Length: 208
Image (cartoon, rainbow, N blue to C red):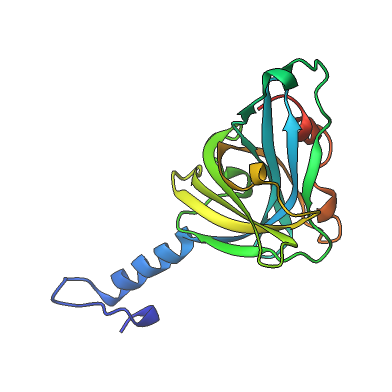
């Protein structure tokens, strides 16, 4: 028997013990584990549309390094009454993460680096589902249909804490894009602060 109980099937498949082991080792190397955690959720007025934006972190298995990503929905068109007001409303944060929030592991079948979660780092189509937990204190988030740099289509969950019960317009499935923001050293105590520098422009600005 080979590693992990796989049979070499010498003779029947013509594979040697070494060949079988090499296949298993290659399969192991190709997979990689990362962890996901939400940092903040916003409702953003971008001028003619209202968008949902969620910041989340992708953390390496050893919790030494991480990458920041942003999901931005396609947005809902504003009403004529809303458009009549030339001044956009300030961004409203409705989700956050306190110190000690749990990160959720996900194993990718194809190996990718921290900055390769989205095949197009400037914006890759994906869906985001938001729902409240049974206690209504947490927001259950899930990204799906996201294509990585390795061309693997993935989905993964993460969580946020809620300031109040989610409004109906902030529940359900949203179509949008996932954008790479930046890499950083991972610090559980600093995670709640989110990405720094120019990334803030993409999170609450009119673009994307």
